[in-house]
Length: 66
Image (tube, rainbow, N blue to C red; front, side, top):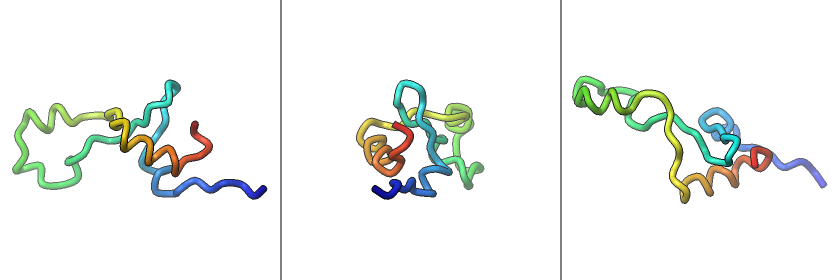
C-alpha cells in the first residue's frame, strides 16, 4: 500500500492536541484591526479549539495525526 498524504494546507495551519482536539489560530485577526473593538482583539489572542464538525473535516486531511 502506498503512504497516505497529508494536506499541506492543514499541516501548516492546524495542530492536533494529545486528547485529539484540533488547535487553530483565532479567526478575524489578519487585517482591519482599526474597525475591531478592543475587546475583540483582546479575546482573539492566542489559539482556540476547533468545533467538532470542522475538526472532523480537518482530521480527514491529516491521517497521521490521529
